[in-house]
Image (cartoon, rainbow, N blue to C red; front, side):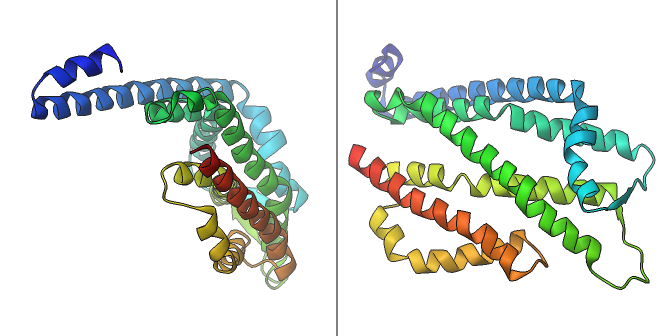
Length: 251
C-alpha cells in the first residue's frame, strides 16, 4: 500500500472515496496526456514521410485493381494528406497507447502480473498490425477488384479519392480491431466476465457471428473471399479460448 493510500484511509469515509476517485482521475489524465503526446509525435513522423506513404503504400491497391481516382474538392488532397498523417500517427503510436492503457490498469493487477505488461503491449501491437496487414494484402484487393468490375461497361467507374481512402482506412482499422480478439478475451477473463467454458459452449454461435462479420467486411465479394476471411477469424476465436484458459489458471 502506497503512502497516499495510507493517508486516505486516515480520513473520513466520504473523504477517502473522494480522494481515491480524484487520484484515479489524475492518473487517467496523465495517461491520456502521454498518449496524446505519442499520437502527436507519430503524426509528425508520418507527415515527414507522407508522400511515399500515400504514393507507394495506400495507392498501390487502387493501382493493382486498375481504379481511376479523382479529387473532387478544392484543397481535397491537402485535407486528405492531413487525415492520412493523423491515422498513420495513430498506428505508429499504438505501442505507447497500449502501454498507457495497461499502466492505468496495472494497479488492479497482482505484482507478479505487472511484469508482463511489456509483453502484453508487444502482443497487442502485433495483433493490431497483423489485422492491418491481412486487410491490406487480402481483403482490399478482393473488395476493390469487385468494385471496379461490377456494373455495365457502358458506365465508367471513376472513384472519388475521399471515398477510396475512406474504404481502405476503415477496412484496415476494422481488421486491426478484430485481430485484438485474443487480447479482449484476456482482459475480460481477468475481470471474470468471460470463461473458456462459456466460449466453448457458444462456439457454434460465435462461428455464425464470424461469418456475418466476414460478409460485412467483404461487401459484395464472392463466398470464397468471405470464407477466406472467416478462417483466420475462427482461428483467432480458438486462440482466444486458449488465452482465456491461460488467464484463469493464473488467476
